[in-house]
Length: 297
Length: 303
Image 1 (cartoon, rainbow over the protein chains, first blue to last red):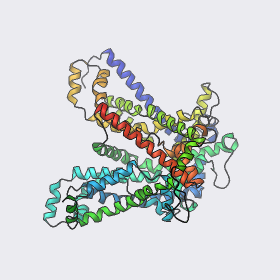
Image 2 (tube, one colour):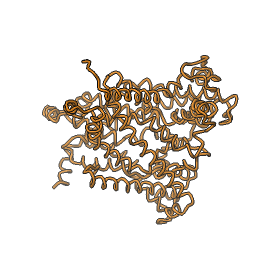
Image 3 (cartoon, helix red, strand yellow):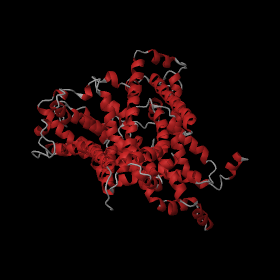
Image 4 (spheres, rainbow over the protein chains, first blue to last red):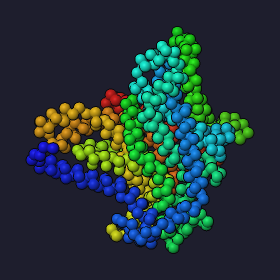
């Protein structure tokens, strides 16, 4: 870099910029960092506000309790299943449709697209949807996580835009000359050329399933089917922290509350871990998704 | 001729139809049938006759909702939370994008981006759980900080005065970084020559932000603003619902949470459908209204 004299305006600008960035960085990162150190610190130290920068009085009490808690593992297992099966079904329904709607020779595409986009702005609302699920006997089954909302119109648009802009029309024409059908072209040519897109849409769906709590809140009553997020609600918000007994004294605090809090810190980490592990990919591909999506608004 | 051509190409395109039909079926069953079921808002719900078999009641349930003593509170809370979210939450990612765009060092910029995007992926439950433990006046770190700052013993989640600021600020904390991506993308399309010639003319960096960066964002800002106005009454159900408690309920009960309570919890299906439809219609009016205004004023519009 060429060094040259900085004007005083530039110096002020840089100082303000650095100060703002530091402030933003701390405001976002510190709460997350604090959760991590609080989860491994002595609960008395945490609850009296002594843990600020580094963990103090290492204790894994919270994690020990979590590993013994059946509810969490049932929830984890259920959520894993809903996420993996759900994402596969999502892709199976969304990608072929997006491919078809990207084909210019497909005459019905404008009408179908309109009918799809319309549902983004207008829907029947919670109650008619709920009653429909009941009539279809989907409530209290694992199917409700997988089938009903498996086509997200917004992601479908992203996929369609990608197919439109990255698959040159000559490619299909050449393949069709050699007698290649749409099925074969889609599976053998279009999909292998769209790995980035499959990752984008797949990860969008995946995070959606992992964090989904609404579906279970409305449609699931059976404890055995509850996903992790619902269990988390019981633990984090309803204060039903200890597997065996009822909750502690709520805001009144007291002896058990600090232990309860440590379990809560731990649960936050344990339940978010898969997302954190995936985060490097998420960041890369989600950004790409926003870019593709923003091309056409 | 045009509609005829659809059928004449049916044979050629049958494979395409097979690939798109599953998606059509899903959207039809789970989006269009409930839309048809919206007429429940104008009917009694008759368990034995299904979704649309009950007796026609016209606008009865709408009247009942508008006359109810809760109506004013619900509307006020919903509008207030939405407006606060838009007024404070909408400009935040724009400012953040302008700041991030000024960072010259690649590594520093990447570190900032990685950090500010991260909270977006945390689930709502975990976020509200974090608020609960961190803001607790007895054991939370924010509680301790406020005590040592002499602010006393305040439970931010259990007071009608602090509920909305807590809601809005935590929303910004979680989504501001993520929402800035689209603005950063718009900034990356600015022609670098513009910056060079601005530098030649002796423009300071404040001036380049004011006269180059910000104008480049205006079309994106307008589009996103119209979209957010279209959601004026759709405050996020999940987060508000999870943040509700008996103490903050006077300011935190919004249309969406009320629909859930009287519909799913107490099975007043017709009434809940009517309120839901009322909500959707108002959103629609705002969306179209903003779109029309923006088309007049700035020639930018969604449709």
